[in-house]
Image 1 (cartoon, rainbow, N blue to C red):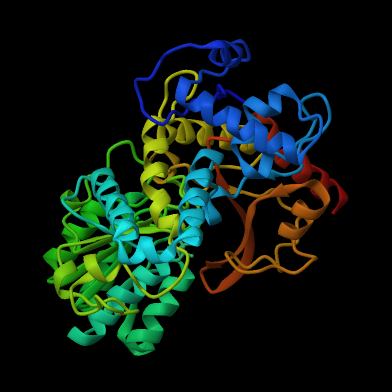
Image 2 (spheres, rainbow, N blue to C red):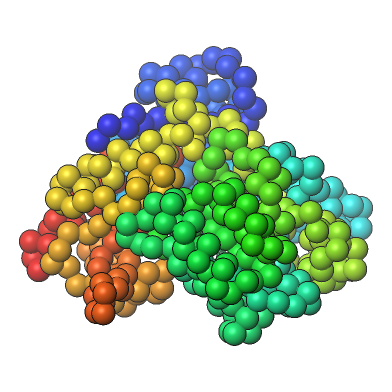
Length: 464
Ligand SMILES: Cc1ncc(COP(=O)(O)O)c(C=O)c1O
């Protein structure tokens, strides 16, 4: 494996002072600023109260991720409890961001009356709205709970306007079902994105064919699809939709915030764009940035006091609930902005490079070929073909899997969490189930995680 591992994330970039703790970090190969050291020390205390004898290594590095503080003992563990290689599904928030969410929650629990009626909660959420807008180079944006809620908001507007909506064949199943539920099954048409064998040319061809055939009024495109994970030429796709007279184009960009160094969302030319921040943007569950030129004229699907005031205000209060993850978005985006590997890479660059290295190694070890144009279609998510001999019949992509599924066996027997998918692939008249793995590379992954996956799969193939 070729990736160089490392961590660095600071509250504010540019704070490069060194104190005693910084030196300790540097000695261990970590570059850590003063601010992050303070946070690290706080985290150490939290971790240390939970676990006796937490090793120095784990204090400084592993304690940043909630799933990795479980290592006990007096040395770095030979093995973490789990190799988490499915960041794409649920994301993970580092401890400093979780601390910001906890602080917001505690403040609310201590004095909700003051926070609500004194305007503090609204001000904190508005600060996160502004941070989210900055991250996507937009003038304004709002936060909704997740991409599912964003989809429902867009689909409900489209139902009011009336007309058919196009989705891609690789659309997230929940998004497609949501459109079918809100608009009606007959009002949803599908553009084929071939998989395996995807490249940007055939994805655009599939879109053109469906636009010509169905003449939809609306289109819900994907920028990085889920299962299979494919980065798509979304700006060209938007332009193609426009040229066929599509009135409103939405982009399901659930995986995008935190996967691109520079996002210029208004520049994509779409009407709607939404991205979870809890996937690749370091926010705790859950928060999703929603951008549109139609925020003023669109209603929230959960209207409350501000329900008739446009989305920007309606999003500030959808009834009593926990708003801590919304408040923590500002801190999460600071963390994302400041994160650097020991080689100075940003999180998107580091993950994309790491993913390709891991994919190459796995494909070599499993003796399988690339499944699509990797240069065009991979992000920090990528598809790898599983070697033959494995039973994939119980691994429908993106759906809960039974105890006998490959996914469950990898998790329960080998401690590897990975997004296994048995895809039904058509070959002329017939079809068969073929096995693929949607691999994620997150900033906390190590070469050891991928080696564990590699060996577990080889073991299962040998036993089959
Ligand atoms: C492409 C895509 N769209 C939408 C969603 C739904 O996201 P959420 O469950 O946060 O609403 C997902 C979830 O993984 C996804 O991958």
